[in-house]
Amino acid sequence: MAFETVKNELEGRGFSVKTFATGGEAAAYLDGVIDGRTVGIGGSVTVQELGLYDKLASHNEVHWHWAGGPAERDAAMQTQVYITSANGLAETGEIINIDGTGNRVAATLYGHEKVYFVIGRNKLAPTYDAALWRARNIAGPKNAQRLNRKTPCAVKGDKCYDCKSPDRICRGLVVLWRPMMGAETEIILVDEDLGM
Image 1 (cartoon, rainbow, N blue to C red):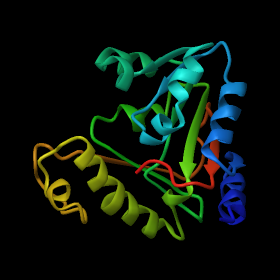
Image 2: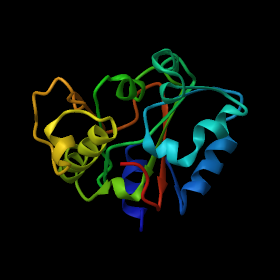
Image 3: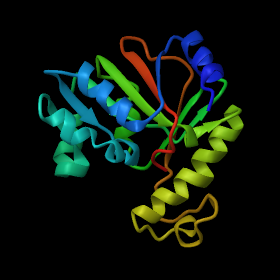
Image 4: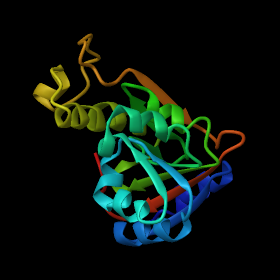
């Protein structure tokens, strides 16, 4: 896939961008540039698929609630570096995330020296509206199923029903148009399908 359009749009908005052919190459890059730091990892199937926790934990202090529970989620908010993915990325440069607890999206907005988004080609959509649709109707239902939630989208697995279920995981939406002030933000684009 040609990432040139989205790369140019992201760079025009002030993001740093690196592109990789494979997830393995992206993981090796991150393992090389993040050293001796405190690292937080947001709930991310993409990060899990790349094995970043184990790689980075060998030479960094890494906090990821998937590896240690709620206390790790809180510790991840206090790190120098934060790594996550996105639910949708528009070719026009908008990065879209939907969250239930808020820790993952909050960490992309404030408190870290550097934030990395690792995004596979399957997250890319041609427009903002298409990226938002993807986040709500593909990533949302898949994540609700993964978490065994009792929501219409998890049961049917086909789309967002904008439900009122107490199990709903789609509770907050964050769109990044530009990097937040005070935090360097780097986008890692991978020419493989990664995450949900």
